[in-house]
Length: 405
Image (cartoon, rainbow, N blue to C red; front, side, top):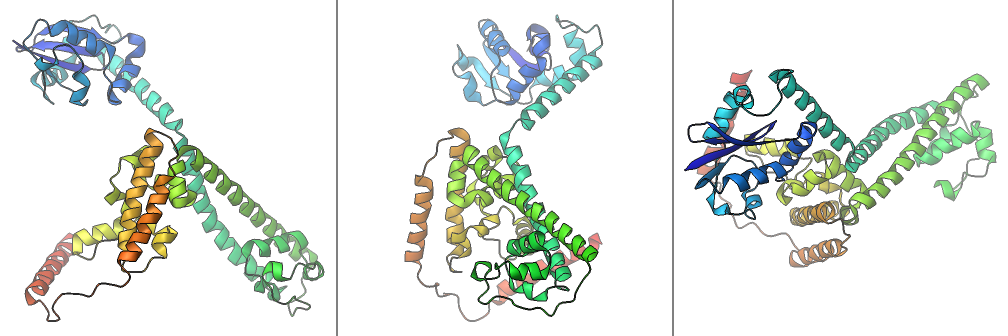
């Protein structure tokens, strides 16, 4: 004889071959959302185990409808009787007649079926939101995104103050460092005060100091506005510095291996791009390699252009500074190590310096094995058949685009 085990928001239900209710095990009313979360996280609940222990003695075959790995059931008694179908006949019947089936159980439906299901959905959503908001990597993602926003804003404002203050002191533009420039304007204001401070020397990147200026004289009220603007900009630069230190510290806490391998900035950007540390750990290295190059990848799939060799990981100094003929190989090696480092951080949390050391050794091997670019072995004569196929593919794509528009 065969029976079907399936579940709903109220608990686990056993139906026979005629879809008649045989047995059930309901969740405690106060823990409905907790039990549903356990199932979503891939865990066997106490209620499912109890029901299987009872029913496996009475039936020759138990068909289980579940999304859990089948290995979760191997440790239960007489697991050889278990088979798995998703969806199953019993599950489809239960979903079509859920209210009818629950009326035959001890589940209290005094407030109405729809009201009970709605309350459970609201509670489950609240618990998911609470769990996601407690994740530390969300704080890291917000911080690295804040740094990107500050970089964009500071870049525009620095350009503005350089043009603005150049009316009064154009020679100060020789100070190339933006932070030093803003600090001089914010702290001293007037050009005479800056020249008398003695700071316009090699520390500011100047070979020779500035003794006079051809800039225009401006009023105190005009200078006060410029100085106030410079002080606000200086505050933004200090905020960026403090957030950068925070990101570095946070990466050391939640992703020490990833931080050691590719630095705090690139590691945090990878996490922010995919959405979470766990999601990054679950990605294959081939996907990690092209994170951030999605447009180039889709263009390759549509038009047949060369696929991208790297995305965000191009920011790594070993990839960016590599010779062009080995850049793809180094990017592939780095992506593999990033996947390993992320999984180590998520599933063990232990710092393993051998990951970074292994990548350095691999880079040296690639550079040693490929000192020069490989010569093309293709014939110098054009391949007419290949060119014809490419033209057909492009014409077909253009036709699709024209039809779309």
